[in-house]
Length: 313
Length: 245
Image 1 (cartoon, each protein chain N blue to C red):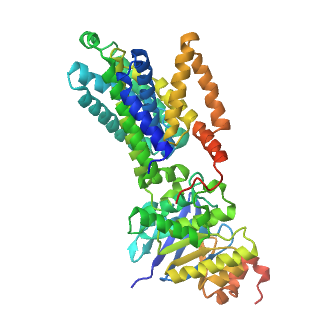
Image 2: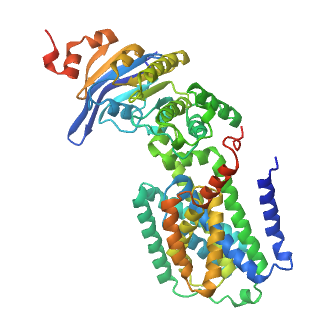
């Protein structure tokens, strides 16, 4: 059934696909949108573990870093096709999550957060020491640099992660994950394998962070290898997710739009002031509106629609 | 055929404290058994051991003749043992329907069709009169409704055995008699029940047999009428001075 909401989403998707071909689809706009897609994808991937299962991963940047490092090495240094390089980048990130997850997911709450943070920092420092310079100046690639394929790749990565999030939010396994978030012991008492659900979410989350990192590598081409391992990638994703609405599909997308707009509008005039704005906003949201923008929209919606009318059976 | 649940010589130590010592009993299919005892006598610990939340220090638990002690909690749940918690624990940020759906999706049911699962979840909500609040998040339900939701959620797993941990605490007399009727009706659905309860009148009227724990030891077992007149039970509850020899 095609209601207005699905219609609006379809229209948006078609517009995004057609955009580079349109007269106003200029390079600046595409660049802005690529940053948006990558940040939205990264935040959505964090949300799978942090929002659905409730394990706060503060080392998420490491998986973004692994994805970008592997993708760029295979694509630039080994001459692989970008799609193959991207896929392997995601898979390597997922494998690392599988190895790290076995001990890390035995930790709970703050301990898991601190453990993952420490792990990511260790990885960032190691990469920085082992690969101290830009691996090579990608002259030939930059000479033929075309923004369009970067745009479409980032869009596809975002579409994939959103698709998986939508599926999770409606599937049995997604419900099981949310049960783990709400109450592990009660979830177990109903037959939910808490470790398995946490692990699956962790691996999926890392895989998509890896893809986002790969899309970033394809887009940015020249940067220090440890740059993508930085904690800023983790904290941007966390802030974006909470501001938009943690544990929802739309939350990370709304948060990313808001974040990128504020950052790019303000950064032009006042350097880095967006960080202060987002810091304050983050605290305000956690304290006053734990559901983020999505909660705000829901409340408005409830006021517009009389109680009970919105439920479908 | 062996008894549905066999608890054999269970010992549980927490550090230096012995919470249960050598507790044995069995429960037959279709029975409703009351488990009583003063605070700290080990009732909840026993529930936690049967459901796999705690591991017994010694002893074995068999369900349908198979050893389940040592299995992780989620596997024990899949074998057909459900429980409620002393402090009510629904999934607060999920709707009533989602709460129950998780039970029916992950429990021991064999049906897997999506529509069928939804129907079953609705049916489970109906049995506790919560169908009209299916789309309401558990955090917006009253304490009583949350209790019933928790029951519906555990029944949705299609258990053979359900452990009810102080379900009637805090209920008014009308609600208590409703709860007693509900527990009695579980028998018609072939569900075996173990009830932990402090309200004597309620537990006497819904249990066919009563097991009494005191300080981690089983001190009596039998028909409700026999158990209440057992001098050891009276002394455990009221102190020695109340026992007339």
